[in-house]
Amino acid sequence: MQVTVLGASGRTGLHVVKLLRSRGHSVRAGLRSSGRADEVAGLGAEPVVADVTADAADLVEAIAGSEVVISAVGAPDPDEASVNLVDRDGAISAIRAAEKAGVSRYLQLSAQFADSPDQGDRLVRSILLAKQASDSVLQRSGLIWTIVRPGTLTDDPATGRVKIATHLEHGKVSRADVAAVLVAALDEPLTENRGFDVHSGDIPVNAALAAFG
Image 1 (cartoon, helix red, strand yellow):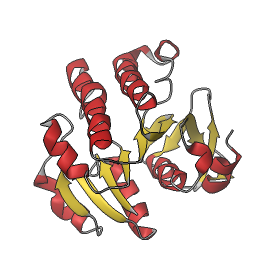
Image 2: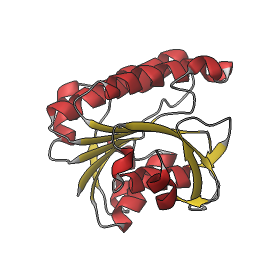
Image 3: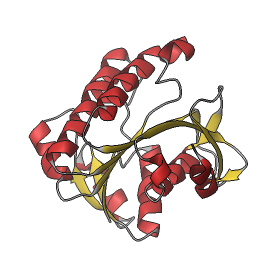
C-alpha cells in the first residue's frame, strides 16, 4: 500500500514511518522542508516536501498516487497564530489536497477533547479548537476517515497495549503506542468514519481496535 505520512519528521510521525515500513508499506514521508530528508530516507521512506502551510497545488502533487494519508502534523510551538496556521488551516488544506489527489483513506492525529474543547485544559484550548475545526472538515469530506484523539503524549517506550473508547477521562499515552494505533487502524474496518480517544492501557492494540464500537 502506498501511504503518505504528513509531519513525518515529528516525534510521532517518525514512529508511524518506521511501523509502516516494518509492515512492508511504501511510504512517502511528507516534510515541511528538505532538512530532515536523510533521516526519513534512512528509514526506507521516500522524502517529499509537503508543507501544509504552503501552496495547496504543491501539496496535491506530493500526495498524488497514495491510497492513504496519515496526518501527524502539528504546530512547532503553542502560539495561537502558529497553531491556527498548522493545526487548523494547514490540516484543512491537507484534507482538501487529499480529496483532489484521489486518496481514499485519511487518518488524522488529533488530541483528546478536540471534540469538546470546553472540557479540556484551558492552557491548550487554542490547540483543541484548531483541531476541532480540521477534524470537522475531515468528517464532512468525501474521504474514508479515522480521527485518533490521544491523551497527553509522552516519549515513553511502546507497550503495545492501549485503552480505546469514544470518550475517556484525562490520561496519557506514548507516541509510539499512538503510532501503532494509527498503523493498525488501516486494517480494521471498525475504525472507518470513526473518531476515538486513546490512552495507555492493558489491551493489545489490534484487540482494542477490533473491540471498538
